[in-house]
Amino acid sequence: MVVLDKPNLQLGSKTMDGNQHKEANVLLLGAENVGKSALTVRFLTKRFIGEYGDIESIYSHIDKTDGREIALNIWDSLYPQSCETTESISDKQLQWADGVILVYSICDRSSFEVVRQQVQLIRRTRKLSASTPIIIVGNKRDLLHQRAVSSEEGRLFALSADCGFFEISAAETYHGVLLVFHEILDLIKESKALKKGMVGIKGIVRSVSAVFGKKRE
Image (cartoon, rainbow, N blue to C red; front, side, top):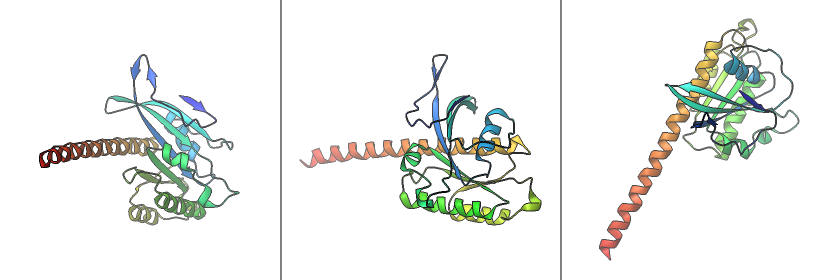
């Protein structure tokens, strides 16, 4: 695992032992103290670390899904408390991302509202392709006695926003975290295949149009 404290948007395809790997860029968004870094480190190391400093990082990791290796870059972003929500996601972040995970704490309603606002911002700016997958994650399920956002409310919002949904505890179990990241990787794979297919269809249409255009001449 490689950690870059200063996000580098020029990360390219990774090579290991002379073999080229496919690559996926995942952007983590959400308010402060919802467990974005804990979620990421839990996935990468299987260990839970409860406290982190205010550091924005890109983690690079080689993962294996369906028997194939993929170079996974995870941008663990900071939520700037001092600015307006409309400035909380940069165009560069959205253009970089192949998929987005938005995290809130089920114990903190304000963090759920941040996720609502960020989803609206993403949809409004249209810097992501319509096929780019978004998953909403309610974290800290182990603190049910402090719950402020119900599972049903989180699930219904994700459904209305056309996003995936998970409710997990990064502190309690590795398996739930693994499901989140493998789901986003699967969805990114489907999204890229869809985009590739659309490019192929457009090419065929152009070719057919050119042939018929010549015949009309």
